[in-house]
Image 1 (cartoon, rainbow, N blue to C red):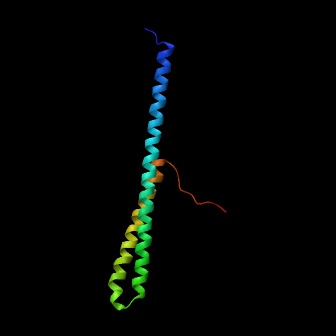
Image 2 (tube, rainbow, N blue to C red; image 1 turned 90 degrees about the horizontal axis):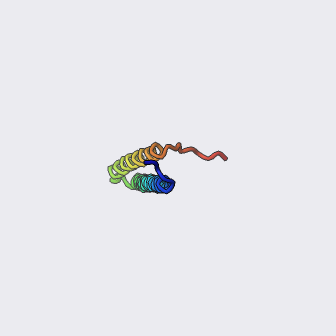
Image 3 (cartoon, rainbow, N blue to C red; image 1 turned 180 degrees about the horizontal axis):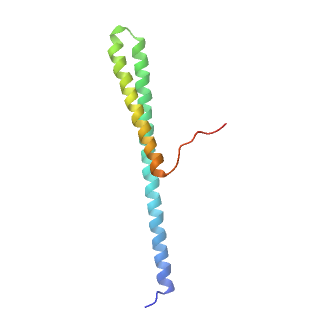
Length: 99
């Protein structure tokens, strides 16, 4: 039995709705990953600032400064890895703006 015009239109609408849903899901996932990367980047900056302030302190702060510096490096690495994953998942390259 041949497909009627109404059947074709219904199938087209269903397909369009599915594509729109999938696009929204992908956008939301990318936004969540970017937010995570931003949070991790801020944590890294905070840890670096902490390390700097502890290093300025007395000799008793040396161990704390070393620990804070290690934390800063770890958080920065996590942020970069997350951001790279976002670019890979969305299929876009992160480029710098030219002045």
